[in-house]
Length: 438
Image 1: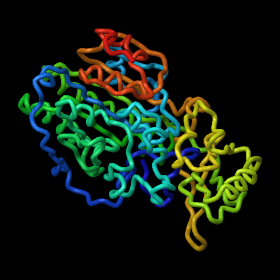
Image 2: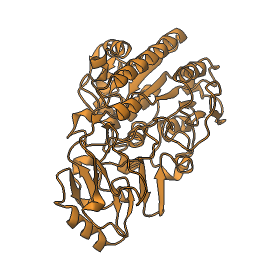
Image 3: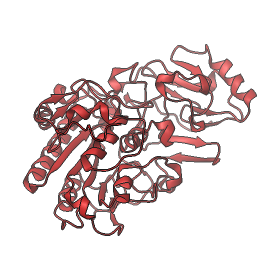
Image 4: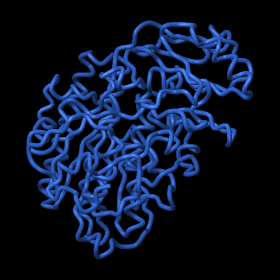
């Protein structure tokens, strides 16, 4: 993700991943690499049933496009795919293909309009307040989040969890925080993050977390700054592959019954042209805006701007929210704005430019946030290997909402009904998931 002066961009535009320099909480204090920002919440010991459960380590490589592994020779990831389960043609992110919405979809099984994080930055008309991933107060306020994150589900059923960074993990949601969690700090080295995961697995059985999340901001940062095809991005791909290799070696050495799941939130594409600025086509006076999101205060204003934008430029389409195409699943939450602007290609769209007298910056070289059905470059990655998974199994592209029931099943948890289904990935499981398939 990018925490730069250019701002945080919403659905139809240049998408912003988790950390590029400033991290997702650009304004927060940083710590030394040797001081891990780990918090502990005492939920008691693992239950007797939890102690018998297997372990899941869920890793995110931000912006790791579906084809990067083969393109750049990511040997460790490709080996995991060969020995375990792999989606060689990628995994489908939810729209918008942005970092916070998709990370939170993965751990709730809900589309963004259902879990509430409809973009990295948005306005809530009911709250009359803004959420931004650079705002520590908002990020840690559980009232912004709906659904039951996987760690809250586990904690509620007597299983201890740990999050080495993951969107949402710093807030109390559905009554719980993880037993162990870290405040996001991009100054913490990747090696230290891996080491912390392995240390958690060395805890006594009663304290040992069975679900652990781990987040890396690369290669998203490089993809934004230099573009997806740049050598800097390819180098970052190989770097995070090496980190996955170190993690895998440590997990193997632990001799614990572990399932390692490596995913990404979205892909990346090269931006075409400069800014497309909506207030050059329509008078947005009286509108709240966030990135390309538009919030009209009256029905007359919403219809007026919709009419002005309807045939304004080929770089985007505009819809009244109720008429957004159903396959985007972006029509039910007022945080999505109205009217809704959807990019037709890899264009950087924003509602407004900088204030008069303030400098403007060109869009970044690479972007995401677009419709994955329209732009295959948005597809994410999926690799997994472990005690619960069939070896040498490939799957066709699937929606990332289906990860939640699958992960819950591997942990032996009773999962609530979500937008995903265990049936989609049940064929990858040694026990075929039949007992709890939704």
